[in-house]
Length: 141
Image 1 (tube, rainbow, N blue to C red):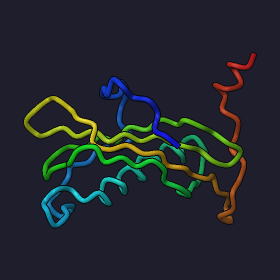
Image 2 (cartoon, rainbow, N blue to C red; image 1 turned 90 degrees about the vertical axis):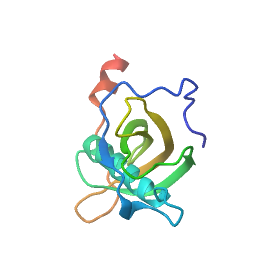
Image 3 (cartoon, rainbow, N blue to C red; image 1 turned 45 degrees about the vertical axis):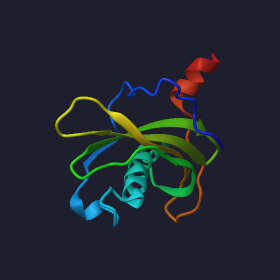
């Protein structure tokens, strides 16, 4: 699976799902922010979007097409933007972009993106069907 075409590479025109400041404890041995920290924050952002759409518990089942584009440095503010790109019977695919902004500038750079797949779960932890999206019903009439 390929990432959605984002040729303009512009900051999304919506509020981020999660915003975090990269701290010294989040660095790798070379002093940049560890890719695992970014992936964890992306999973949190996607999980928030998935839980809201599913109206309940969800779990990450697959991560696809991760692209690390630029490094993140200590002190950078990183914003994580989510977009649900597919809704199945029990699962959701969510595109996540991470954008960094230094403390001293207003410009932002996309640093990573990926696609996360979640499954909706019932009380016993088994997959459950998702409720139809009311917006989908409106577009079909």
